[in-house]
Image 1 (cartoon, helix red, strand yellow):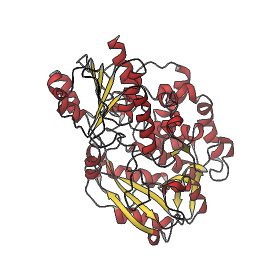
Image 2 (cartoon, one colour):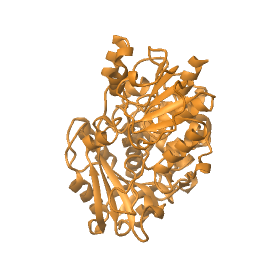
Image 3 (cartoon, helix red, strand yellow):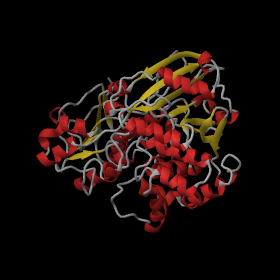
Length: 479
């Protein structure tokens, strides 16, 4: 257990030491408030940790691994995390989409470098993303805040918002003509874990495409745990007290304070603070819906993945998706509660950009596919079969593997309810009003209780903005 607890009555208590909990504590502390964090696990970090899951010397990221949102986040950009040892690294290209064995579409970070992979759609891609990339520093703060608030830059947000309101498949068909650009866009939109024919799913592809060109899709050198370690060091430098190995099951366990911020999802909020909340609000939280889960494999490899198309090795993030129709079919099957025979697979090969994560000459990689909520189906053979189709001989390189089904993901991190790594379904209602319909989603009817997890805007990802916004709401009340 780690603690430097010195104050019996801190100004604020944060329950949960994930990126959002750490962000909330940092923002409160740099405004002069005394803060204490309670974290159930042995270390802080939540979904931003690293571990030797397979063999000694092979460093894996159990959850988040690629961090475009961290690099673009106004909160994260306000911190000098480099002084705490955080270093970002990039692969040659942000993402590759495997259309067919031996044929991948690689998205270049430089918009002007788009060429033959997208064919005639390169110009259309630049028309869609170019104006947004040019203004990304003004645009992103609005995208990483409460969606229902009036935008600070209405014309710019309208330029983003009109196409973002569409379904991913609808926008792809409207904007692009060839299968390459349509598949590439749909693969990015599939990070939503929603049916791609639903309204607003285009927004996920728009955000990830924008960030690919604006800041790239970076990794933290040495593993995602270095992101959490840097945030922890920043918090401690500001006087934040951190107690790990301390699971909070009731507000009665906490010391007196003027504000409590919960970096947990609505299910845990009801368990921890239900007696402090009015019946109507508690029932609204109980109606909060969680989305599909994931099945994840981490591999220790004897060498680099032998892609049929060598271009695939240029990107740390690879979508094994096929055509737009293939991606949409896979997500539809999961949304209906089924297991896709050929799932859309998200694969990350960190060691193409960061060889420090494995012994010399060796590599690490991971992949996951979406599965129904809470699924215990073993997808190992299915996922590895998909990889083998695009990289013959892959199986011969596997030295060791570690797997987690959706239920095991929740056991690893209680915020991943049913294996949902986004903190809740991000359909139209829960994207606009998250977790409940409320002008300030970070507040509750209890004036001393705030929510700061990924179940509040802007949702999943290592960006700290949910914690930042919740802290600002608490500071306004604290005066």
